[in-house]
Length: 304
Image (cartoon, rainbow, N blue to C red; front, side):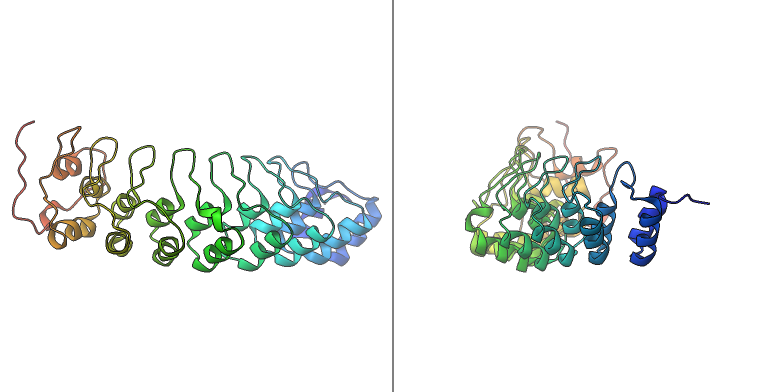
């Protein structure tokens, strides 16, 4: 049977929101610092129990800025799980709004991994900085572009108009990210309110259009072509075009779109490797492409 003050039992009571049982346990045990990693405040914030959070902070004086092994504070936990009432409580007690966890993530960055505009608003209204970057060079707007909620992107651009002017350490922009994940409405926001270059390349020479094509997001690709002036024949750092990248990832529909609808030459060669899309599709250890389904007249595979 668990002993009084057993960290595991205390943490379980906090997770379940059993405030009355928790009070009795703590009073009988004379207090407890909680498990070695997370404090009880971390558990309460993560599970959204504001009453438990307040009791631990006020009755037992537990430190709201305590960190766990990942340097997360209770505010990180509440923000990442979308618990606005817990976020508001911690900020009201003076929690540092831009505290950093491992890999330099702020609570606002973690909130942007969830589609919870209320939590993001709460943090920004308490002074959170959307321009801070994590170790990979992503700011909060970039992270939000990966999740693709247009309302959150609109809000961040309203409170911080320059948030879009960012790129990761490998030169990927929020437009690359939104296109790769197929977030059509998010891409519409980015094209309307931001000023991204049509064929801006990351460190591998990949454009947003290439990202959309190689991940099979034809609706996004069509939007980038029609409204952003993206170039179909743009090449990555190895001279491969969107068609070649679609062949590598096995995107049959994207290949049909490029070849049958847009008239891309199925036998076009990458400038560095001199390989055609069929070469790329036939390489071992690559997702299979149903070559027989491609509605094209021929594939010339002459020796290099």
